[in-house]
Length: 155
View 1: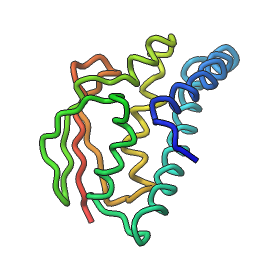
View 2: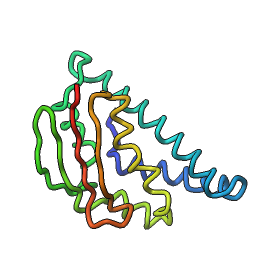
View 3: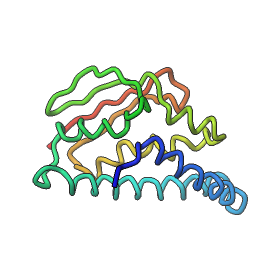
């Protein structure tokens, strides 16, 4: 079975999540609905990270293999990135265009786009390899001109 590009998966998920989120807001309020969505997406990201870790060569993860995984998220121009540094301990880059943010805004879901995508980035690492940590000062989804991804392998 061919894997769908991640941007397509996120759009399909958003088509389901959007109406569910709207109903949660109506019944529970915006704050509680956001907390529930945040928690659910983080759990899904950890599970996805574990699934990718299980597929790592010999079941052993590394920064090099993690960097290769980024092809999944950048496929079909979903992210335009400028790599600043890439080695066995560091993966630093800026996202200069994010079609995930554009897609959520087009769908009227820009307000929760950070919950559906951005909060996955560091949380994914918890499942994939907890030695990989993300620091990010800003995101396009949050209104910045670029996203600053700074991954470190601390193992």
